[in-house]
Amino acid sequence: MSDKLQRTLIILKPDAIHRGIVGEIIDRFEQKGIKIVGMKMAKLSDLLLDKHYAQHKGKHFFEPTKKYMQMLPVVLVVLEGLEVVRVVRTMCGPTDGRNAPPGTIRGDYSGAISRNIIHASEDEKAAYREIKLYFKTTEIFGYDKPDAHFYYDVERGE
Ligand code: CMP
Image (cartoon, rainbow, N blue to C red):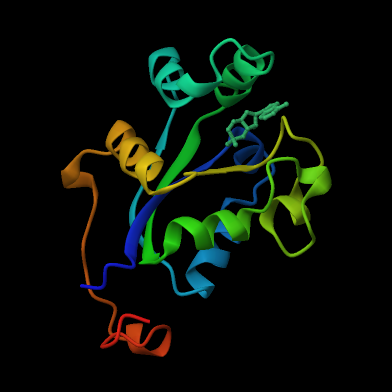
């Protein structure tokens, strides 16, 4: 297995669910050749959100963000691929949708930092922590895709 093979967590936020664009967004990752290895819907509790947003505790947007994240259930997805943490962050674009370039998910769908459609783990350490927060090991599935060599040079891990 290549050391560039990583897993990351995305959360499709309540605005994505409400606007009916969950499929469109997940499709972008599938088209890129990124593998879905875990997926579920959940209503996030106060406790989970306190842990998830621990680094933002005390900031002015902490409570409003928690409230918004509880407006509807969210869709949690674990993605796998080469350098997928960075690749997925790039595909999402900057946090503030108004400043996100077209072609990125936030650039195409979000017009406000407080309604930015998707969360993606910041780095490998955060990805590890966040996946563990939301998924049991039995909810993540390792499997081979027969067409993987059309997306990556599988032998060389590139
Ligand atoms: P995300 O990067 O997924 O995690 C922190 C979230 O807080 C961020 O997305 C936004 O949804 C939300 N948020 C709301 N206001 C702000 C702000 N002013 N700065 C940063 N994040 C904000």
